[in-house]
Length: 321
Image 1 (cartoon, rainbow, N blue to C red):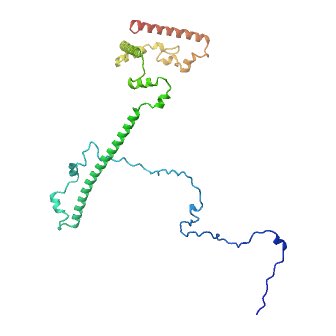
Image 2 (image 1 turned 60 degrees about the vertical axis):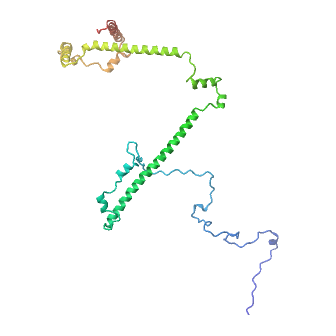
Image 3 (image 1 turned 90 degrees about the vertical axis):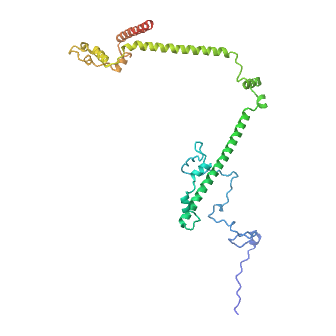
């Protein structure tokens, strides 16, 4: 038998016994043994799950907006318009889903043994379509009448509620907290007489009527004056080509007024270029000489006086000068 070898002993350290030190526990990666846990799959959350890390949720729920759908649905066509005949009547159903003719009925009868399978199938399908169309029209008519009754009842309730609120008496708190002392009298007059008392209403209405009549008379007088002025000016209107030719010949028959020192008169351009807008405006500017401005002012006053005298003469005589 082999001799037993004792392991080497550690040196004795008295200081190690006097110092406090934590207790030694074996190292392990497994969780400590707690209460037994269920082994169902609902408690085992994988790491890739969003619920792996617990996040506190708010007490207020999130608002979910409706999903936007692309496109626009067409407006449904009315099945029972007022101008069209009643689609639930027996006459309309008989004309829309007519029964097969006698000669076709004998040929395509479903229980006829001599008919082929295709003919019997077609006969059954046509009969099914007729019954479905009749039943659907009757059902839609019933649903429409029910929906119309519901809408009418809801509208009647709303109108009754609005009428009751509109005609309800004034509340006591509103009357007591009114901004005026005569609130009760004002409310009574407003409800029974249509408004507040107005002692000067008749006199004010009479004044308004008189002003309206004067305005109408003024408009009639102005219209007459404009018609009279149009009648007077109509004598010099150019309405035909011959009148236009005479006016042109009378205006341009004397060519001597267009002549200058160097050549005879042929057109107005011989007298020089016409005044531009800058030249016309320069007469009223300070850049011109004082004497020229004085002459221009004298000429302007003379022309203005003649124009005023002409207008006064036309008003006094009623004619055109």
